[in-house]
Length: 206
Ligand code: NI
Image (cartoon, rainbow, N blue to C red; front, top):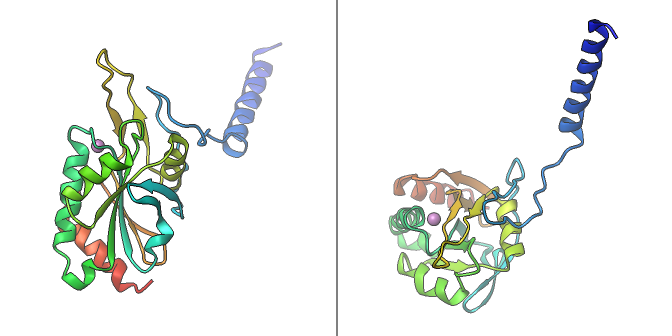
């Protein structure tokens, strides 16, 4: 083979790989993340209905039709990120007028169901704001909901004492009264932005 033939063959192989990656290959986004692994994500969050578990029984997004839902994925043992985010969300809720607040439900979804039981969530989450509710599910259920919303998380291996951290994306999701995902606020968004996003979703009348 001369060098031109080799180059042509190489180009053909590369083109084949490109076509395969573009049109055939799909990231495995059905798996539950294992320690050290990051959850593979759908490229664009679709949102959608789900049922998880709260301390008083099932928590379904459909239960909150007619309300704007402010949702966040995290875990109660989080050393910092979740505390910050829950505080910002709580401040955002507190800035709503009383009538608006009645039409809003905060939802903290734990991505650490191994430690965050529904009861633990009930003891922890409403402390930040009474309109906040905690929910979780089986690892498969949590992974499924996270995937729908494009949230990612990664459990670290346990240390000698059995403790572990869970890296997680930090996005505040705004779901309109009709159950559609309408807004996503990046980590650290100030309370005024959260209040404004909620009010916009309320004003849309959906
Ligand atoms: Ni956190």
